[in-house]
Image (tube, rainbow, N blue to C red; front, side, top):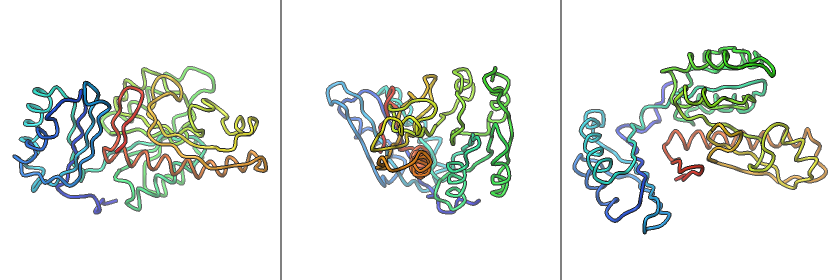
Length: 291
């Protein structure tokens, strides 16, 4: 679909590194010299004396495309070289390419596709990959290519992962696991080379791994939740982007917990994808700063 609602001539600038005096002034000075008008600015310092500094700026630049090369070079000279900070600049009128990996469950997958079609997510979806064919027709209804790559139960997944990497290569800026239910290897994450976001159906760090609703029911919890996080080699241990919960009681059956949890999963994953694609999330070790 056409993303007519994306802001034209708007860019985001994310800066982070060791805090020191003069960062905000230096960044603002560079932007002003290229005719940028700051629309919004968020910043956070963990400690003004040697702590970490984080900043997200959204700006309007007349004829952004023409201004990008010179603006990029100037930012590298001042922010990168002089201040020694990490930074990234992105044209917000260009949607990120988000590939989705799914399994049999369709609620998170279809919610993302529906939001993308309505223009609620600033993304394009080049493909959906699944280890089952249950969601194939639903995906094709949205006009999105569907690829079936089965994974052997309990066996070596190297070949399947290699096929997925080939499909994703140069075609995606983000991978989303919409209840994919497969553990990805460290080599896969390295070869894909883009961030991977997962939705886990519990309020981490509680109930890591498989069967969290069943374990929540057995434990008699009064809250169930969901967590969207970046994927690392450690199962369900990556930096958390977003979480939410819903109150439950002893009266709910396991099936009811699953049904109510699915609503939370959809909302949490959608918010995490939106925030990532708007450059609102900055990773800091195993934590995130979300503006």
